[in-house]
Length: 281
Image (cartoon, rainbow, N blue to C red; front, side, top):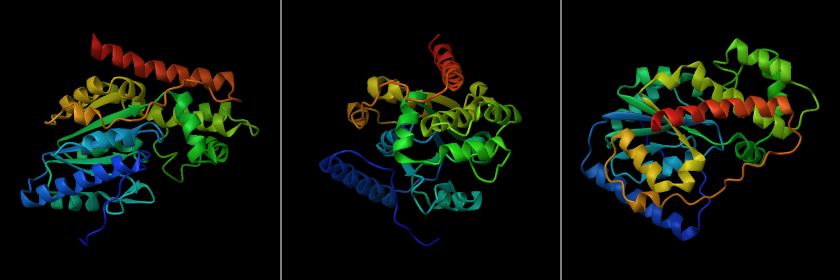
């Protein structure tokens, strides 16, 4: 396999911080090449776009035991979609780190299959409040309403509709209206992408842990320590938790969202939060 320059996700931090972390990554890569170890675990970082997956990838990258692959890395992805399993296996064969970490955003419908194919494997699914997720998404992306219309008509021609249940599709068709705002379309996308978690029965899968963006940024030491413990990663300390920098938690609904869509998203978010209460009890 020809070498390619690694890529990371978008980094909004200051230049000195980015330089410091780039030096860390280069040093880690050098140490791993000098003392390579075979892959002993795969980790899939899942969630809706603009939910904090880059943040989680960065704290996982802070472990000396990981090699991370963002969706912007051409070795593992093409146009943000994960390459064929054979390519990922080849990357794993050349991986010098014992923990192979890869984003799985466009692959949310395949999480269970991916964990079964790449063993042993675990998944961390990041959930962000739908209001903040939608607000962030419309600043970065667009075309949400046309996508909604296409999916409501049964078109599953790309990753957005792949694996969608008939019940979800019927909901999208019932809620769709052509004068919907982009914010409403983004909220609907938050719903149908996160609904895949329950449709794959991942709540009952011990290989999967849900992490809430809000908890991650407001209680970084507690949450990162819990993630490291779940994945069996060594080396957690305050420096690792200190990589979490953003504090964007507003919970303010974007304008022009129909009450039925808000209620649908609130209900799904409550189902996720109920899982958190079950873990704590």
